[in-house]
Length: 428
Ligand code: GDP
Ligand code: IMO
Ligand code: MG
Image (cartoon, helix red, strand yellow):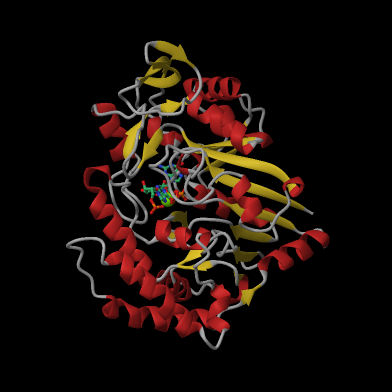
């Protein structure tokens, strides 16, 4: 009957996996619509921590189906590892997971192209996750890509060889880049055989049918809106549409079927990889956020850069996505901060502006802050927002007033249970 979309509003890692898991009980289907194994979505419950890369975060609930949509790019090797991990935890993954035949395949040579391109860029590198994401989407738009459905064709190997021959030609242009493709191909083909045995579907038809039958769908975004190919901090972005529009193209959903858009943000801000980050901190506050928030990438283990929350950037992506509900994550990490800064506008080439301009690099732009008082209390066991420290209530009230969208959930820790639903309460 309706599709809700959940997506990150910053540079990724906002806590999407945790919240999809919490919300799954309300939906019949959870569907990933873009990205691939560059994503790392962490879920914590019952003393376990799981990191998912390609598989939707609804997979732990036996009553919901999970779809990997046509907009996703799949590395069969990483996919197989994810499934093996889930099976080791007794998750009946094959009973709940279906994969679109139109999703594109990441080849071993895509990963090599990603590495070669990054190495050639030197200090201007994107800081990609090196999972082959950019080259795979390039082949998709270049109309050369291989799709999951192709593995059912008798001439799959010839198609593979033809594409790899093109890749080798390109790789030969990268001087000094050494590689051994044969070494990684064997595992890839074994994983293709494994993928062939999973449930492959024409996902858009299944989704349309489900909607006709009154089912509810939650579309799970990967990355964040500031990494969007069009609207993010280009060229330091990923290669897919991470904004709400991506759920339409990545699943075959018509825009008028979208009901709620959940926008997730951290109570501060992080970024991993290169690119501008106006509110980035290089002082003890930044170090404190990194340490307390355990800010290391779930996919690459790289340290995440940390900074204050950025309202002009959030307002921009709220408009682009049509966000109806805001979800604030990692509020507990701010406990103990005497003062919390909030970027309210920018100084841009000597003028104060309150919107995100064409370029946001630090040479042109510096943040203008307002200060709010912090709170001392540990809030990780908080269950009722009425009992929250007054300054946390003030922070939430301030943000929702400035952003013009209600904050409906406040997260106070990584566990499923550390989630406060403000809609059920008198709240702020
Ligand atoms: P995603 O990519 O958006 O799913 O987010 P990641 O899983 O990459 O990163 C979020 C990290 O923060 C994970 O390690 C989560 O377990 C953790 N996390 C999520 N919500 C909270 C929270 O409210 N407080 C704290 N302290 N950690 C959280
Ligand atoms: P989740 O879904 C944070 C970043 C990379 C790099 C840029 C391009 O866990 O939030 P790519 O490999 O996509 O070509 O890298 O995008 N990036 C992410 N940062 N979270 C992610 O996903 C990311 N996926 C990609 O660090 O800066
Ligand atoms: Mg992540």
